[in-house]
Image 1: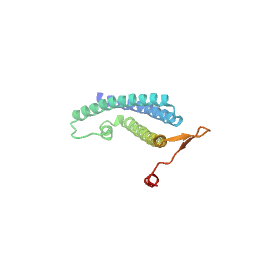
Image 2: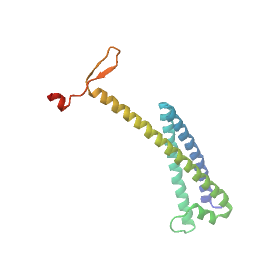
Image 3: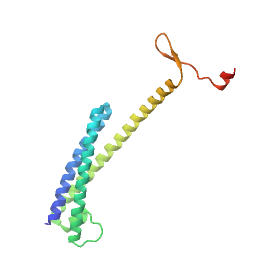
Length: 163
């Protein structure tokens, strides 16, 4: 077995582990969004960014190892995990199982992030509406009633100003 294949296998295992952590952080962030817990949302978003940075670094190392393996076997163009598994049949089950698990985790993360983005969009829509209502209420002058409720006067239109 090649040193590069064992390094690729190790990196795939690390990627699976890191993707599991990222999925956990995404789930925690989604829960914090539902509870409107700003401190938890901030903390989990920082944890997600750190996990993404580690994944990017591992992915760079994995690509380099695959490139070295391709040069060693004089394979032109791109090489995928299926081709590596064909070159090293002893490692085939392990490599393909790790690939499948990584695909599954990436799909789950993408699904959770889609839900979180929809939830964030909804929250921002509600916030936008509240700010517009507040801006509309403060845009017009008015008086307060004896009970303390604001009584907004009608805006003077062209017809009201003339008549």
